[in-house]
Length: 420
Image 1 (cartoon, one colour):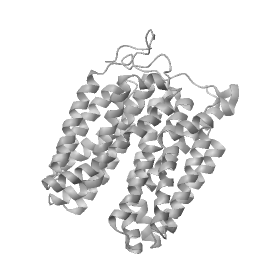
Image 2 (tube, one colour):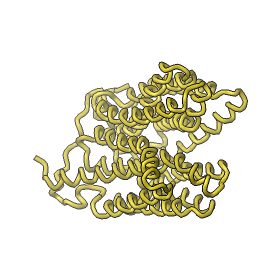
Image 3 (cartoon, one colour):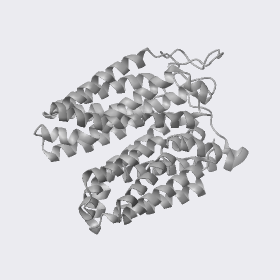
Image 4 (cartoon, rainbow, N blue to C red):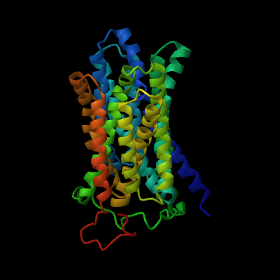
């Protein structure tokens, strides 16, 4: 029987890192676009000026992808999370004041760095060390909670503005929430059980997985991982799926209403897509000990391709439903499966820098909305872009299906069967 103190502490850590992921998602990507029209109306900004702030935020999230690995190596998980929380507190604070574009842009930059320091890299790091016996399920649940933040964000904005009549109150609320989480992280989160419970930590062994699930028998170094072709296959799979999702979030509403779909139905489809996305991550976590994440990734890429094709023809309820299910499951499971593959293929010791570097590389996905806009101006439709993305997804699916587990130089083997 596990030490009760260990059980309480590890699920407390899980709850705090999950709350971080929920609130930073709810307060940024999913709610900024909802609040911006109010800010534009009050300050008489142009759409391009306001959009630049959103782009700066997204850019900094990617560029700061390796920052949490640096913070975790030199300090610890609580410092990394608290620093991210305080940066986001400052960013939301500047958004709430927002008397000038310069202040808005600085706030966006702070939020981008804070997001990177508070999101998946430190969260997965804490789970790897505190919940090794239920790692797949815990990572899936953690990512699901983060995904639910995307669903909750617009609801929080409309609810707070409806109650207070002020868009600023949303940013004040997010600022207070992040400050509180930063304090909780400093007080209660620790990188490893041994750091707080000593020999009484009673850390359980690694989770049992099916013999069909590949797991490396030793931890790879960062340089060794960068020399493995499989690493780049995983990174490309996530980058292209993220490009599909960013493009969908940017233009799907415009595309569907242009196909004579009502605004209410289009908005409902996007909300349902977010919910499917979130729940699919938990589903991936439940399956990952029995089905190799490589095959989960293949299935998810197929769903993403289906979702893109359906979105390109989303003038009929059946196509809208296929888009919601396909793209929702596609991105949700790709997001989970790529994270699990990095752990299974390269181990946990250097996962923060391996994972963080992947996040930094995926910044290239930002070209998706720009490309779609250019294609729409040239061909007067977004459908061609979505169909092109579907073809790319199928190509990546084939490459992933052919991918075999990496072999570390001079490594005799791993605790598995050949999952390829």
